[in-house]
Picture 1 (cartoon, rainbow, N blue to C red):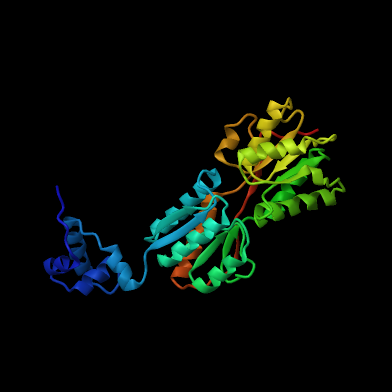
Picture 2 (cartoon, rainbow, N blue to C red):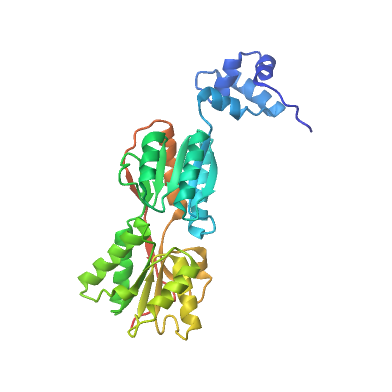
Length: 338
């Protein structure tokens, strides 16, 4: 059956009520009698009426759009995070406008300005690098925002969603120490990334310091979270005359790249060297050996960010700025006790 496009005025006329009454029914107002509500909804169903969201947005000064800015969608962690954001957003009548920056701060600023120009209702932003321009943007834009992974230091009014990266990294390194590893390398995130770089490096150093183990700068690398960067980081770490017995990689992509390098250069994982990753992406159980990893819950991170943002859009007070999501250590085949 072909449905003919109808207007809200026609729905009102056919149901014998005013346009404002139809509008209240469509917005689920409690100030409409059940009998009228049923009559209007029956006609809506019969005619296939759909409200004009553009017109609705002009009246309410809302676009029902949320801008989401992440480094890359090809990363399994971020693709699941988007699922969490989208599920909650759609439950509340919002759609998302997704942009990827590929860790390029100029692209990030460009997309943020596009979000502002299009008057999106809110922004969820995974920050890759701190820049003064970001602080200037959010100071002037005055748009509801939630940060992912880390916060902008000068924008303390905006909530952010993350895990306790220092503690998670500390526990991962401590696990390796408890397995009698003394020479432990770390493949941290880039220097621009406070969460996966600085914070996870801090946790690693804390665990080694407590155990009075050597902190060798030659066993520390700072790279982006790609398999290619993990490969090159492992090559750098294994160049020295003394090689580590374990590598803690601050992302599974880096860990998998390290395993590729080790396999190609005659090292057996975990017999010769243990490898522990971070994120617990789907590939962690596909790769051989299966990867031990710090498991994050990106679906929950995304859903939490969406709820926080929608509350801001609805002008509800921000209850807390820091919102921590759980994590856990998952042990598989890539680590062993010495």
